[in-house]
Length: 205
Image 1 (tube, rainbow, N blue to C red):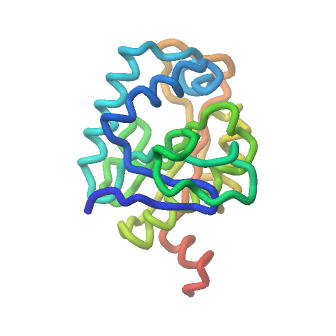
Image 2 (image 1 turned 90 degrees about the vertical axis):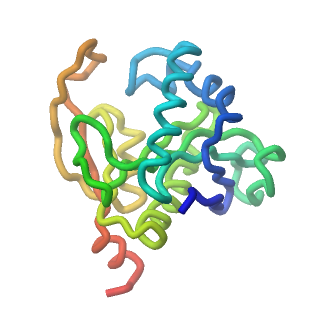
């Protein structure tokens, strides 16, 4: 099952492909976008390497992977998503790969939800909107058992998205850092949505 094209109220979500590389470079050239991930912008070579890893993960479990989000009219409420990516404005990268990190389970029924938006589209509810689409895909289409999301404890914006889409807090943990970011001593947090939680939210029980 390949990753499908999906829509939210304002966004078109297109599976990540090699021709999106320059948009990934644009996104990761903003140090604020990567503030709670790496603490600095990524070089072109680093983004090329990240792109290759994403494409490989997108082939690991049917239906899971990465999507590029496109909108119109600056993401303001009202406008419908563009019919094609070429007609829209690049909004960001949405992530639903199989869990693969050092503090994540090696389990093909668990995915890792993430979102990385161009700064001018922050605080418009777009990450939450797209994440709901990915959660529906994860449980209703792919049939996952669990979706997790992780971020630094100090990243209140990212935690706000996790709470907005109905995920629940699981734990605070303290991964080893080769080059600690500011406030890394406060640790990272993990949230989850289980199949049972999703069914309850949809009124299936």
